[in-house]
Image 1 (spheres, rainbow, N blue to C red):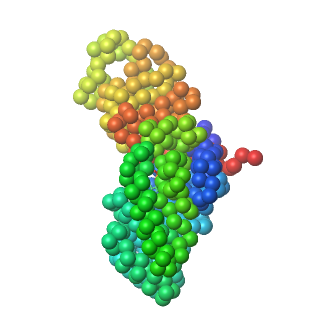
Image 2 (tube, protein in one colour):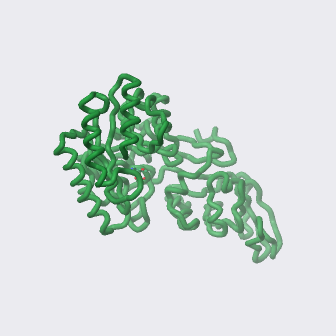
Image 3 (tube, helix red, strand yellow):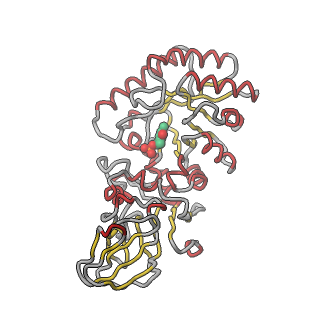
Length: 383
Ligand SMILES: *Cc1c(COP(=O)(O)O)cnc(C)c1O
């Protein structure tokens, strides 16, 4: 399978690892259903393949940010519950209702759009009312909640919508003991109780993302929405490593060494000459760059494994390529360079790249570009 991939670079996606991660997460939240969050092409891992594998491992919901992402899952033949939550006016509301998606609703304008789409399609829209319990991003403020709930109940009585869910999102679930966790949980309880007291009968109430699924069992409610942990990456180094949680990174990014050459001491390397060779040495050319999602901020710091040794991006990471100082070693051209993977063969991890670039591992995997082919392995479940 991997032999057929183009030689320059590839991102290998281990679907057995993803299935195992889903099972691990289900075991952490045994009383809740699991929504596999596959937005942004499954954090760069390939949405359709990852969605299928997650469902095989017991996820019963799929979640995306945009309706277009959710509609693409339907077009690929994925059935069952699919929720999307990042809406704008004039979006594909009617297509979404006709595709039986669950629509995250953060305000009155969105409820109006859902009702209009329900009328136009002659169907009932499934809506999930989102409470802003403190994140301060999307969601309905507590002061506006009574009106949203009342209007949703009215629309439900007219057969236009069915309120299938009440939900919210944490601001700091990855910071153990942060006071906002307790405050948001309490407010979510109150906003859910308010809606239920007035007659809302949600199928699912949910607030937990990956860090909450892993560390805050009191917040699991009926459903947990897991993204990053499913891809085998710890939500935050502060919480623990992926291994601490029994998770295995799913993506391995590698490239083929494109050139190996001898250079003398004092030779500048890459744009701006921010690196110069300390002595006679060998340089290796790694044929991926920031257009492929390799962060330019990791110039001079980004690690790779080549010829059994860790090497560091020497000088600037350019659009299509960067250079490593091989210290006189002469690995053959075409030698595999591993940028990141699970880490158990000595290679760096996405977390190492996040540290090198001053960002989070979410951004590392999500930004791997479309020029890098995804090669899905273990597409069929073993046994
Ligand atoms: C992205 C997202 C998630 C998943 O977050 P992770 O930290 O990756 O688990 C859950 N819920 C919402 C609303 C999201 O946007």
